Image (cartoon, rainbow, N blue to C red):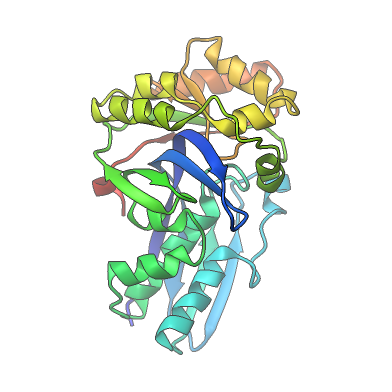
Length: 298
């Protein structure tokens, strides 16, 4: 058993997301570029005679803290149970999850926690599972988990679990802005009528720009089907995106929303925008982070 340590679970953004069709199993096919970002939750592991799991999110707004539960439905704890079932390991651990990634925000925070739990327990309990085994377990927990186990930049198809890894663009500063809007992913998918401005060709173009290390053009040419599905019913999302595009910043919505991702040239721009958000009276959570490559990940 390893000594006490911290395992980071880095989150992600989607640079373009096209819903390409509905599947017979009730899910939808997507085509998207997944990109790792530095914003991460932490899982702390310490020796204990049995498994004790706790968590907290003191850095997040109170309304968001209430959205997280730390019982058996928590995805990180589900990952722990999956490891126990797969290996038969009966060792103990005192585990604490510290959340910094906004909840229900399209950033893959819960899936990142599951990935961090798998990697952390493999090390803490000295299980010696291969990366392939971790990916196999991760795929049973959620469509985003396999990507978040490896990170970097990848094109995801199928439900998002079929991954083709690409060279990451150079790291760029981002401002993540989450309006206080509750978005139901299931309800949004339910509005899909097999028509979308975002297509496979859109993601082809985004991928080409990323391969040319041109993140700005990737942002400007991307599109997200969820914007088409959600913007008509959520004016706050339209206002939020236009707040930044009207100031000349390439801005996209990540995942099924509602978080907007604002591409910056330098971190000082993020601080300036945070002041402008405050001055305009908007109740939006904003966080400064960077994109990262697979090599940058813990």
